[in-house]
Amino acid sequence: MENIPQCPKPVQLPQSEVEKMLEKHKEIALKYIETIKSNHRIIAVVGLGSLARMYADKISDIDLGIIFIGKTLPVPQGESLFEGYDIDRLLINMDYYSNTSAWPMWMRETFSSAILLYSRDKKITERSLRMHVAPKKKELQYLTTNILLDLAWHGIQLKDIINYGTPYELPSDDFLVKRAGPLGAMIYYDFALLQVLRLFFIANKSFPPTAKWLLYEFPMRDSQIDKRIANFMKSCTPINKRKELIDLFEMAVIRLQDSKIIPNNLFNLYTSVQQKMKWGGLLYA
Image 1 (cartoon, helix red, strand yellow):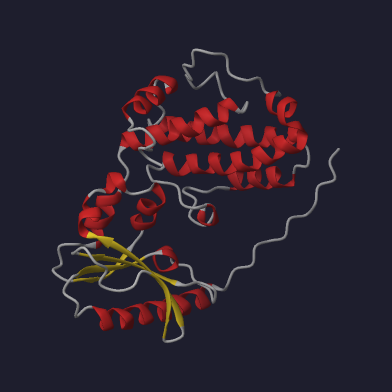
Image 2 (cartoon, rainbow, N blue to C red; image 1 turned 60 degrees about the vertical axis):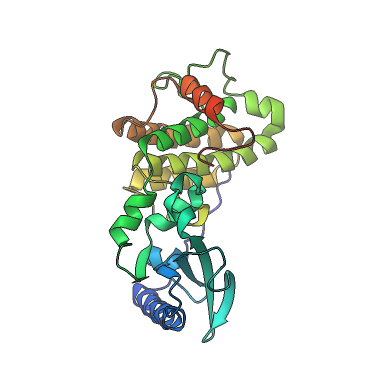
């Protein structure tokens, strides 16, 4: 039997302190915008990161997305101090803004919760911005396919409810332990947990956020999911870790099926999209 360690509870600021910090960050962001909005090449400024996700503490910076026209940057890109606060600016040329298929997935996810702080001609609104970056069904299906096949290639699969469609036999349940050893298997299972958690977001028809926001923004989170994650984190052997992972994986797949995101044949979709890619390019990386 495993000697199960007790996991410490996460420490978060009281909500009143979070709201106070967010209010201050928004105030600083608006003050900064006042210093740059006279530049007529700046079309819009949006709040990203903690401002958009509604959680900030004393180590949070102030993330701003600045949309502009022209071939040169209207203000410097990256981080700098403003009135003692760290402001991190992501500048986006209007031509690039118009072509979301060229955006990396993390960027579209980040902008999906953006709050509008300034819009010169009012053409860019919060609603239009979020609709602009929203994922299309085919993008979510390809992302799902990538995750499901990656898991399957490492022995994490649900053959009874998913049609993988591979022309070759998928690895057995104990494949990873045999090939990588117990420690190597457990390292992969930790990565696989992130992949499985991302599937819940895809089932909710949204791009998954970066790892640090996965549980904070988890869609339709319930006690069963928390229990599975806690059991997984406490597991000290590959067998038990894999068992908890499979249980959580099955819950994610059921949600994907309810959302009609899983393609009829994973391998067919995967290969058809791969064949359309330009050499060295990733469609939805």
